[in-house]
Image (cartoon, rainbow, N blue to C red; front, side, top):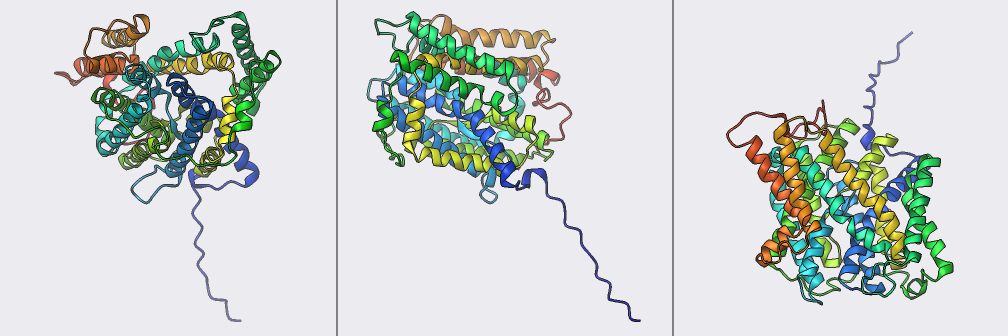
Length: 467
């Protein structure tokens, strides 16, 4: 009896967890967790900048919609990629970064009313072009931005932003007669207590969205006391795409451009660190090309974003935490989250819903949000080798330089305008000092030191490489 011909079977290679396409019943809840983790962070910069530049409710709603739209586009580009040019193809969230808030507030304070947003957007666009130019070489520069430097910067981001939620908790308007009244402080305290109770007594997804639930509870509690108005919700259009240059043509001020370019270096460092961390979590090697494509996406989003009302974009560390916590490593989960942000940005009425949140409620939640940023920086510093006396001095002097504008706002008032913009931001001042001291202690005339190791503390034993 003739034997059937032998057919060689080629086993189908296993799909890497990053490239898996989960079933909808797993994909949708996982995407919702990413949205819950990032949402408050995405809308924080437009809320703060909109308030600082005196925008009305409609203007702030447009800013929120634009930030959501740009975050969605940037996240889709990162996760799905564009050939070999852009996108790191990791479960990586890109959105407006809180790191840019402080220097943008400094620009707003030193610019005439009516020109504040154009000056900010001009500086942001140049920072985006700067990122696109420097991005391909940034892998080689990472050695100058070890955890010691990034830890200082992240800590300063949280610390220098802390007066913002404190002002919100008091009502937001310092010129108002009732600024700091007990009704505002009580509402802020109620919001904070709700968040703490959810963190203490819940778990899983509910615990993950504690900040969001606290905002909802605080807003509902404000309604009976007339502290929350729904007029803006009724007036907001249901569907509308952001209008190009709705707040005026960009203006390019040298001092403002310099400060945002410095901040962009910090954001690029954060993004590179996030890619390295995700590479380890997802067990996919992060190469120099991966980082270059990811930073190009940052640059594109930061360059194009201001056209529609966006701000500097970078990695969202909280979403890296979500991937680590849930072990759902599929980039398509984050792509769905990005597509959802895109839809939210096309519906200004949803931005108006966020804008309903009273200032004291934002203040109570902001204490948690900005405080957690500072804690993240402290955690990074604790892993960066503070048993070395040179590192202790570096951190001490850098933090001191960053806190000067907070402790003494008039300290630099006799300096030239460009110096006020750069040094008047705690983040830019602290970052500049940290980088210079890192060069002085660990690179000039010495070959030593664990303090100068490239992100070694951030990813011990990692197999990631930067060729």
